[in-house]
Amino acid sequence: MIDHEHYMRRAIELAAKVPDLPFAAVIVDSDSGAILAEGWNKTSIHPTWHGEIHAINELASSGSTFNSKVLALYTTAEPCPVCQGAILWSGIQSVVYGTSIRSCRGVAGGRSTYRRRKSSVAVPRGIAH
Image (cartoon, rainbow, N blue to C red; front, top):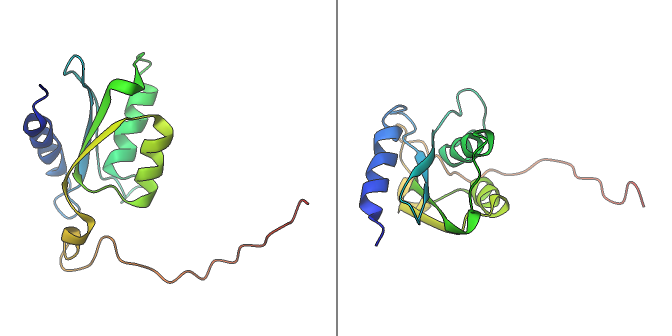
């Protein structure tokens, strides 16, 4: 049986690298128990470089062969919609998170990491029909 707490503790250790935004992730081969990739929040460099994205990119660029059906991603917080999409497209079959998005509100000095934003983006449709 896989030791979820062991992998979550590793994600928490990685999250300590960015105390203001303590989010990190590890990707594990559930069959062997090996940690295949790790990532932590790097949104100071790029706004979409969340811990999950970092870990997925590390795995993809590692050159390792892996069976996505046995991958598990451990993350300190419930993945945001962007990370959920990346997890889906990468084929990872299992996600274990430490805390919910609702509980994350107030992290980072009282500002909400997951605040809703009003969109003012114009999206023209039917351009190439």
